[in-house]
Image (cartoon, rainbow, N blue to C red; front, side, top):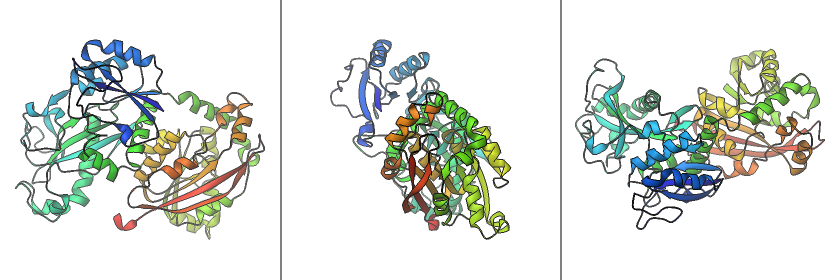
Length: 498
C-alpha cells in the first residue's frame, strides 16, 4: 500500500513532504518494507488545505502519527477532526481521544516525577477506575506500583500486550520478591507474572472500552497496584511512542517481544482494523457470501477434492478444543472424526467450533452433528472476538483474504491458540483467477490470493516453531477445471512457556 503519514510540523514549520530541520520522528518504514510511506507535514493554520492536497494524491491509506516526544495536540486534533468530518478512513488517535489529553506534568495524580520512559501525555480518569476489589472505588487518588500496558485494537475488539514497569528495575527483580519502592508486598511480587499480569491485561482492555477508545489503533494504559492487590487505572495515552526512528522505546520493545508478527504485522493489523471499521470490504464479503449461498446445497459434490490435505492436518496432535476457520459444510470435522478410532474417542478428546461467512454453509455444517457451534461472519471479524482454543485450523478457506488480512488472521490466531495452528494455504494461480473473472459478478468474487509468500515472510512469534510445511494436491475447481495445490503450515507452541 501507498500510505500517507500526517505529522505536525509546528506553526512555523515546513509543509508538504520536506522534513523539518533537526527533527526526531516516528518512522514506520524502519520497521516494514511491505508498504510505501510518504510523509506530509501539517501546520495548524492550514490543516484543511494541506489535507485536501494530500487527498488529491489518492493514497491507499492515511495515518496520523505524533512526532515522537515533540507534541502539538492542537494540530493533531484538527487533523483528526478534518478526516472524520470527511469520513476518510485513517489510522490514528480519534478526535475523542485527542480532545481529552492532559499533560502529565499537569496531572495531579502523577506522583512519580522520575519516569524517563513513560508517555508524557495522558487521557486521565477524574477518579481511579478500580478494577479489583471494588471497595473504596470512590477515592480521588491512588498510590501504588505503576505499570504500563499497551492495548492494540483488533477489529471490533482489543488485546493487551505484556505489562511493563516504567522503572529502571527489571521485572526479574520484582518477581524475585524485592520491595522496589516500599509499596508492593513480597507476596504480591511473587505472584506478578502469573496472577497480576493477566489481571493488568484484563484491566487495560476494560479501561480501553470504558474510555471509548474504539477508533484508536493502540493506546497505553497506566495502572497502579496497591499493596492489598487493588488495581487502579489512572490514565490512558492514545499516542504511544511507537515506530521510533532514533531509540528503541519501551512500546517498540513490547511489540517486538509480545505482539505476534512484530511491527510489520502490527501495521497490517491497523490497516485491516481500519478497513473493517469503515466497512471497506463489506461489498466483497457480501459477494462471497452470495456465491456460497448459491453453491451450498451442491458444494460437497461439485468440488473435486481428495482427503489428503485434511488427513495430513489430522495426523498432528489435535486433542482438545479446536477452532476451524472457514468451516463451510464441515469437511475438516468429518475427516477428523473419521481419523479417530471411534466417535466416542472423538467426542472424548475433541470439541469443535467453526467460523464461516455463509449462513447457508454453516447450517449444513451444523447438521453433521460434529461441530458444537458455527459462528457466522468473516474470519477476520469473528476470530478476534473468540475465546482461547487449544488448536486453530483452516482447510483451504483463506484464499479470499488479502495478504494484509492473512497477516491479521495469523496475529489473531497466535493470540488465541494455546498449543497449535494448522493452516492449509491454497496456491491459486493466474490461470485460475483469469478464468474466474470471466464469469462476472458475483462469481468473480471467488478470485483468490496465493498467500504462500505472506505465510513465509510472517515473523513467527517467540515461543512458537514452524514444525511442518508440506505441499499437496488440494482440489480441482468445478467451473474452471484448474487443479489447486495446497501447502500445509503447522506451528506449535512451546508448552513449557504456558
